[in-house]
Length: 238
Image 1 (tube, rainbow, N blue to C red):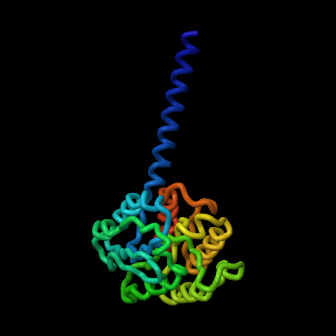
Image 2 (cartoon, rainbow, N blue to C red):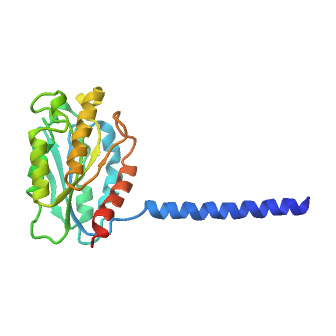
């Protein structure tokens, strides 16, 4: 009996050690950093729900984790204008500190985020050797020409944003979060917005991230997958 008991204890210790190693490997994988310096414009729609404000710290951590030589711009899409809080800078801590809580008011709602995406694209330095990317945090909904099935992922401003991003070789990555208006009340509006964000990302070489049509839980998993996507696109091609 004592031998069996000793065998059971040893087996349990071996299994525990194995789980610890596996857990450490998973943790290391989760902590994978972006490997190639970027010019990254972070655009945040200003009428998103208040929960987005809870994600400022994880967004700051992502900015600070970018490799040396990266340049970051932070801007807010507010009522039809692009408000630049921090122009492109290599001071990553300064860029991180420029983030603020979105206003979360319909008074700040744009008709669509894509006109301001085009404006942001024009702020990239065409002479920089860094890879270029945009992170758009938005509900993706375009109501500038009405809200119906024809507006889902096929609007004039979205088409223009895709064309301009490709012309300037800027990949667009998107995080979906609902706004305080239509996309927080209507599943149909949310799906239209997500369709547009998906098309913008797919046709510019980026990726779209969302968790169903009811909103999101946290940006943590988004940023983990964004790091992987950036490394897949840029690090392996270097």
